[in-house]
Amino acid sequence: MSKIYQNADDAISDIQDGAVLMLGGFGLCGIPENCITALVKKAVKQLTCISNNAGVDDFGIGLMLQQKQVKKMISSYVGENAEFERQLLSGELEVELIPQGTLATRCMAAGYGMPAIYTPAGVGTEVAIGKEVRNFNGKDYLLEMAFDADFAIVKAWKGDTMGNLIFKDTARNFNPLMAMAGKITIAEVEHLVPVGELDPNHIHTPGIYVQRIFEGKNYEKRIEQLTLSK
Image (cartoon, rainbow, N blue to C red):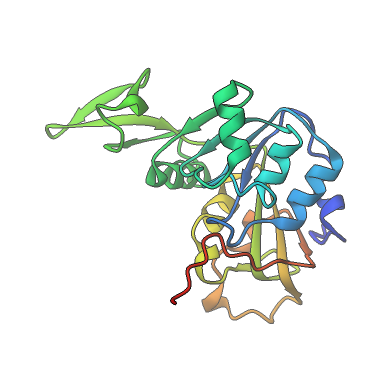
C-alpha cells in the first residue's frame, strides 16, 4: 500500500472529534504546520493534544486553541501562549503539566509497547497525586502510564516514499519519539524523495513506524524569543 498522500487535508481527513493527538516539535521548531492548519480548517473539536508545548497565540497549536478545538493539553512547557493561559484560568481547558523527561519517556514507552514506566521525577510533588509510588533500592518512583494516542503527527526535514525520516537539528527532540508512538503516524516533510536516496546511516525514524507521508509547503521559520545585542 502506498503511504503517499497529496497534502495535509488528505492525510488528516479521518481525524474525528474527540481524538487523542501527539504533535511533534520543540518550541516553534519542527512542528507539523501544514497538518495543524488542516485541522483548523476541518474544525474538529474536543481534541486531547500531547505536545511539549502549546505554541504561541497565532502559530502552532495556538491556532487550534483560538478556535476552541482543544479539550485537554498534556504538555511540559506552556509559557508563551496568552490564550492558553486565559482558557486554563477560566476553566475552559483541562491541562496536565508533566516533567519534560516524563513526557519523552511516556512517548518512548508507547513506541516500545510498554504499558508504563517508573520514574523518580515528580515524587513528593503535585505530579504524584493519585499515582502509585514504589520503592526500588531505597528510592521512591512514580508509576507513569504510556501514552495511548490515536494519531502521531510529526514534521521531518526529509522523508522517502516508504516513510523513512530524517529530522534536522532541534526538530529531532520529540518528533522521533512521537513517530514511534501513535497508532497512526502522519509525517509531513520538507523534501519527499524516492526510496534509496536517503543514506540508511542517517535515518532517524524507520518507515515501519509511519503510515502516511506527504511533502508540505509554505513553512515559516519562526523564532520564539529573539534577542539581539545592542
